[in-house]
Length: 111
Image 1 (cartoon, helix red, strand yellow):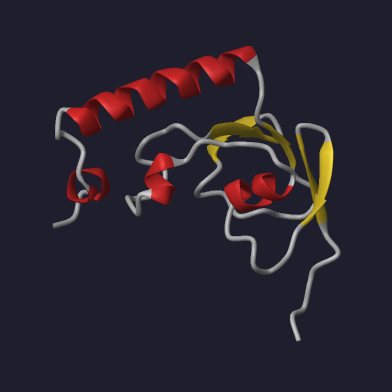
Image 2 (spheres, rainbow, N blue to C red):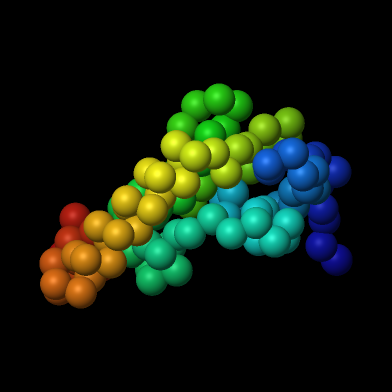
């Protein structure tokens, strides 16, 4: 039997219940059909290394892939400034991957 928390957070003004299985804000956003790009997380690189999942949590910038959901959080994903930063981060990350300059070792700093 799985135990679920009755705690909730808001992501872009949409309320979501959080559970013990939610590891980060990317997981919670997916349940709401809100896309937060997180290529480093999906490609098993060090969380946050691509800087593409930048969001605001209670008014402070944070990386969604490394932020554990906590009851009462107010998360903002979509603003012009955050979208611009994410776009630039993704562009840089993709150019590094194409050039062979971004490997799991380089991203994590360990190998």
